[in-house]
Image (cartoon, rainbow, N blue to C red; front, side, top):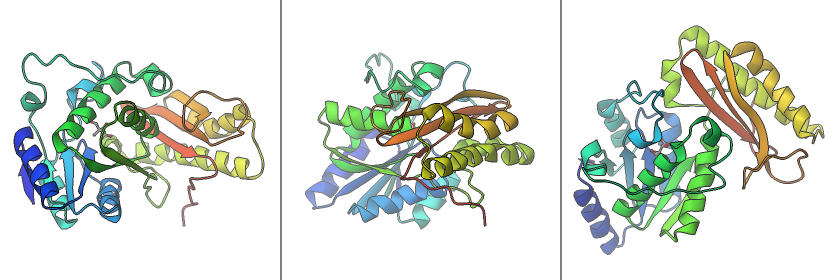
Length: 288
Ligand code: PAF
């Protein structure tokens, strides 16, 4: 496995591999890798990637001024061990200056789907995400890209970007990987103390309860969100949103008639967690 720092070297490796007949898979991450990321690597292989690149870059453009850019975990040596053991071919870990050299002044912006949910609470966040991911796609070139659907809105936004800009990327989203007790895997779980982690389970409890109500036939959005919200309200310090939305456009809905997602963002202390379920598709099993 090679750890590549320069965009030009990364492009050269991918171009060369494709000329030799390889299918390149890309798994974009900010590092602090966990089993959820490694499942994305496996999915890239399952989708036929013969060369897999994991990109690791804590992208300053997608963090707001009061967010956790400074304390976001940076664990490249540990990440490299995990990637190597999983058979990753290359890690692309560029320096900030090679992604955003002096004079950098372009932006990729998707409208509509970025303007709800996270877009309301993290202004500019998705512009940072789409800009960096467009750059990563530009560097790696034609490829199959795998994203986790824990960042459900990000997944919708990036799919829109790839379609709108005719990027030569085959996009796949993977269901959220959870701990056995239901907690969605996230690099930010590292911020949680033991007692905060126990409180954080309220999100999966709330989402599971809403799924169960949906399965019993409940279709009213206000009822489903209040079922999801109750345990979160009791355990978290603040809730940004618990919302039911159309699973594709993310437009708010009042009655579930089609594919719908319940999305949550809430804070415990300084830690902000997000999670979601697509009703009738995702399951959060009860802890054994
Ligand atoms: O999901 C993430 O880790 C990031 O938002 C991404 C897609 C790697 C862009 O920085």
